[in-house]
Image (cartoon, rainbow, N blue to C red):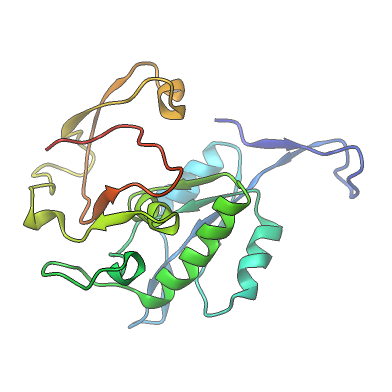
Amino acid sequence: MNVLLENEPGDTGERKGEAMKAVIGISANHNAAESLYCLKEAYVVSVREGGGVPLILPALDDVALVDEYLDICDAFIFSGGGDIDPFYWGEVPETGLGEINPLRDSFELKLARRLLLQNIPVLGICRGCQLLSVASGGKLVQDLATGMSHEQNAPRYYPFHDILVYKETLLARIMDNHEARVNSFHHQAVREAGVEMRVTFPLHI
């Protein structure tokens, strides 16, 4: 993946006419108990190896920060983390719901809705994928463990189950074939995809 941007003729600055590296904003996890923001280094390393400039984005109770992130970043990644509050798709908490982070949920959903509205490139990983679906009106399974076994009994790096990717999707164009073997550690999952969301592959366990 090459994440370089070409300056428009009207752009100003010392790098005018040069290829500019895309700034990729990555949402940070938030530990309220320890007043800590954190992010696994694999996110940062992957963006850098792809030619981008990674920028870690903390969630704050500050709506204006959404606009500032949009001004700075060319594309976004919503990272993994804890569960999302079922309040956001009109349900009450069920048995098995994990720890939620009200600040992170509120801020990231505001940011996600802006990205979808403005058609800004965004990738959701794990919780991030679920967040994007909720932001567009989707619903989640609150606790996969109550309905199916989805916590693999193998090392995290080990591909544990198969997927079949639908043809004529972005992921299918990226992959060399339509079949892959992946690992999974999800606690929640998309039950109903959001408006204008397209399912790339279903998972039957």
